[in-house]
Length: 195
Image (cartoon, rainbow, N blue to C red; front, top):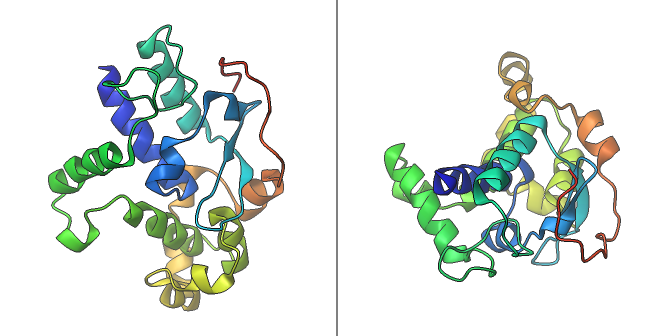
């Protein structure tokens, strides 16, 4: 049962925060604090602190309860390695199972598609490209605008009015970005989670 929550939690966190596989794998439990999560971006991205969505929080609490007492400092742990983080290749395999079940085309059967999906969903919900850039940790707006379909989405205001997946996120640009701060991660070595 914990494996089911692990899979669901990994996909949820990758989608919600537009993460790369390794960014998700290396989140530490100490980075969850006071209703917020610290995301360390790779590939020159801007790291930052983000609000934890209530649905994500409930999912993670259930996952932690099923894990029981465990000494790993990582949010997502490897079953084989105990205290080590889940590997990016394991995350890829988890996502492939979802992709196969959803009958996604081969060119969209990888976890990075979730990063593109949240960008498009945020734009569909009315977020400005600059706000999406900040949410994804992009240094350059060109990276945000290279997201597949982003130019079309930005231009199609009627689509934004009709379709708002942000309802499921329950977050407006002001909610998400006002709460997102550029801070250094907590330096605490406490392995408990107080989110």
